[in-house]
Amino acid sequence: MINSGIQDDVPLCVNCDYALLKTDVLQEAIFLFIKKSPLNIIRLAIWILRGRSELIQRVSAEVQINWPTVPRMDAVVQRMRAAHADNRPVFLLTSMPEKWAQEVSAEFQFSKPILVGNVNSGASADDPATQIANRFGLGGFDYIGEGRRDLSICKAARNTLIVASDRAATPADGFNSSAQSLSVGDRSGPLVILKMIRVHQWLKNFLILVPLLAAHRLTSVRSIGLAAVAFLAFSFCASSVYVLNDLLDLESDRQHVRKRNRPIAAGKVTINQALLVAATLLAGSAWLAWEVSPLFALTVGVYFIMTLTYSLRLKRQVIVDVMLLAALYTVRVVAGAVATLVIPSFWLLALSMFLFLSLAVVKRYSEMLVTLAQEKQYAAGRGYRVEDLPVLLSLGVGAGMAAIVVLALYINDASTIKLYPTTIWLWPVPPLMLYWVSRVWMKAHRGEMHDDPVVFAMRDWQSLITLVLLGACFAAAATTWPIS
Image (cartoon, rainbow, N blue to C red):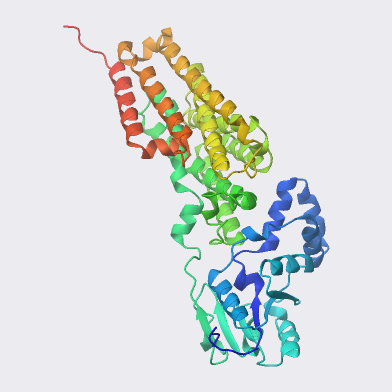
């Protein structure tokens, strides 16, 4: 078996593409290439028509991979280092272009790359096996492979270690008698998928109910039903965008202290799995949105385009990014109005604009504090610098205060008296909101805002108490109190 305690000079060969690396580098490079410019999709289509070889060579020439951040199988790395410590030569077998092969091999200064033709293609797996056997002799090397895509190499090795997520690739498949299986515990599963689609972020989609609350239509069963379907449609759409955003932000996420643990960035979910989940969620969202109404489906489509534009380009544009984030929050409110046939008031839209701008700046401000703590000048994938922190602070706090002013003016508006007979109960609302906005910014300034502010509010007990008190104020104001 493959054991670091064996002192010999038999080389150790490792399947770089599937046994060592947790991700498909070519697929990641394609997303990086698209992120450079969406128009590159046209160039990709042309290269694909010319064949896979053309695609690989062109993409590898255009994209620089940040190899130190690419996730690897730790157990495989340990065996490579153990073999090197035993003075055994270590080789990386890969079908990647020579440029990439040399770069990834340089990450392990003791390893050397061996380029093999389609090492991961079951249809032509005999060619690489013959190539390796001719070089080292049949049974003249130990091998760490994936098992399904490189079966013939596994059989030609003296000792084989199978790295696979399924139990199908075992010594019973006809490997040599010394074959072993390497258990991996970080493959995709239901909990990992749920984490990838960020179900906890669905809390933000309860903003769809705000127009119903503002119009006092919560007693309408039909409106509640439409709002529930709209909530699911928006949640599915948002989750599909989260997945696509993670695919486009792989490189920058891996440089972030928390985002590097996201399932795709950590290599726990493959690119193909992520794409399948995103497509399924988007299809489900489109179907549910159409069931609500064609106009609501159009609203969801606008939201999808806005979020995709944000991920591809606008998230790196200073100020534009936070304004678009605020707009994405506001679109949820508008979508709720469209789904339930409620006309949103000027006050509701004005409040949404300022409040959500403040919360959007909170997110960016918190990210820049992390950048400052890492002693960096720029946040990966953003257009801000650490010296922008005072400006972000003043902008965010100012927007939050403007939202409070809008709320105070709304309470004094003539139309408000028609909805709330006892407006005196609304007077505590601005101070309560002032407290919550100030608390959010205090937490952010201390570096304690690790979540989206809306998600933070649903987990923070003081925010929840504030929410209950706000609800009690509006309920009391909507009640006609007897005059004794």
